[in-house]
Length: 348
Ligand SMILES: NC(=O)c1ccc[n+]([C@@H]2O[C@H](COP(=O)([O-])OP(=O)(O)OC[C@H]3O[C@@H](n4cnc5c(N)ncnc54)[C@H](OP(=O)(O)O)[C@@H]3O)[C@@H](O)[C@H]2O)c1
Image (cartoon, rainbow, N blue to C red; front, side):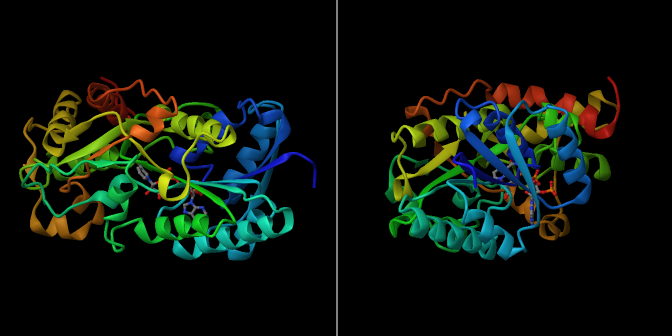
């Protein structure tokens, strides 16, 4: 193994992960780092290898390892040779994170230095049962560990987050968890141009596609509940601000290592209304008013049930490290029509 800092990237071909990877290869530590990227499909492995070979990601050391989250031996072996792991594939995969943690523990036993784990969770951990019927009032502050610790262990993402923080408390790794709200915007950059990264997020594309298939855009209940939002570039910037904070020893870790990503909140009604206006403008719907999802629609999809909840938070910890998100809730609304044009392959 070279004397370079070993950085293992999981989920580097995804919406979040590709934006982070593009920034990591330009990071001030890139020349002294070697990146190992887990890739699960043959197609993406070929495209990424071509991009690396052509210098499209710069002159940095990038190795590809074929495997999935179900290849626990691969995850453990790669983590066991890593100084840093960026975990950006799946916020809910308990066996996968256990394999990563086991590998990092081995790394610590070999080197005596606790390796770094930067894991991706989400503000889904904060969800209530509002079903769109009320606006929440309980804002979680990531600088107050007790706020996160008050969450039920059964909340989504929580089983993985708890394992990560518990491993930190044992001292054999340093853990940092980023919890983005709804991420928006079409992701850009060489990894996406090469067909490696996934350009689209989750909530806005879901509302667009569902809106087209049902002829009008849906909303859960009255749409009064609120969620935080954050642009994909601001999200990826937070990983880098945090990484800088970790390397300089300024970043809180473990129970003090939760980092929300938000730059404001929106109501689900406002978001659905903005999607409805975009689809009407594009000739894909005649109804400018969102209509409630039926009980059957609501029950058939976990994601739709998310769209009725409150998840309220303040991303104070990242801001204290110097994170300055640029995109606002108005940018969220403005992002919808261009995204619909791409997703629906239409021009205005
Ligand atoms: N997007 C959001 O608004 C948002 C907000 C908060 C939290 N999150 C969470 O963040 C995580 C990543 O989200 P994303 O939007 O970046 O998703 P995404 O675009 O689907 O990317 C997921 C990445 O993980 C890889 N991956 C997924 N399952 C895998 C498996 N079993 N084995 C190996 N690789 C696997 C994917 O590989 P392929 O390229 O081969 O598919 C891809 O690189 C998710 O857990 C999501 O719930 C997302």
